[in-house]
Image (cartoon, rainbow, N blue to C red; front, side):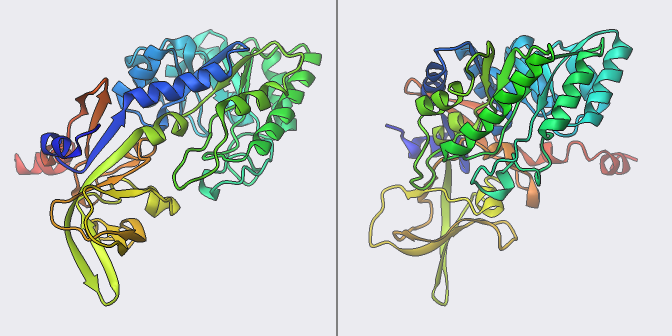
Length: 405
């Protein structure tokens, strides 16, 4: 049983809490679902890039899916071997490509012909052969929020099948490119199995066409996106997910790769915030807390719903909006939800906050970012300290130089 009052007293609020035992359980479920085939679960670092979180998953056997060279560095700092790291992302700078090649990671995931040309040129300059995969955009509607849909031609991600085939043929004929993988990812918070299966069928058929051209794909990367329970969604079971994908791979000798982030971290994390006071404007009730949109932006950005629990509730619940101190009308965690009366220093738990919470946080309104705490085997430990004001201004060099003149 988590003693939230003790944690709030020890570490302060607002505060992120991560259940490392729950993370391990989620990882094991997914890994075992693919146990019938060669597989590699690569954690999507963007979901939560805390080094302790990454190390915890790496120690369990996970690889890492990275979308910046900074994430690649984090993955290797946390102990991930190069042969378990993928570097994805629509826009990679030349220096990022060069460093990824120097670090000898498993593969760079290409998202355009132009990117292929840059990787080839840099690999030639370095006198090496770059392992690559191509992100295929299968033009499948993932039936999710438009901001986290990535598998339609209207999205910026990946290339169509014909372009992908052209890239693979060019790569095969290049002494500086080694096409070892293929990749697709149609979106996040997926709760429908049919779009995933349809996308997998399309990409598996492309692999068969490439085989006929003597292009041997060794890694079949199905991306991530498995949904979690925010507000009672009907979820895809890992076994059904794996079977749907494996059923499309008849005759293909490939290592299955997947890139979960939210699935591993989302429901394994909570955001703890303290009530400052209540305010009533006409018939509108506001519960004002010390957390804000700079700490957890998903409700403001996506209209995302997070369950909110009041510790030790007393009295009848009435509609209330839970809002923060940031000077924006978009600064809210929930609107008009039933909530019992609150008083100063009461604690609220914002659930399902382990993924895309802290990692998307900012210093807007000059607010230091929250602390992060790991819960494991009945114990708690600080894995990121709360920021201080002096740390926020430390890099504002011009002003500092002027004041020292």
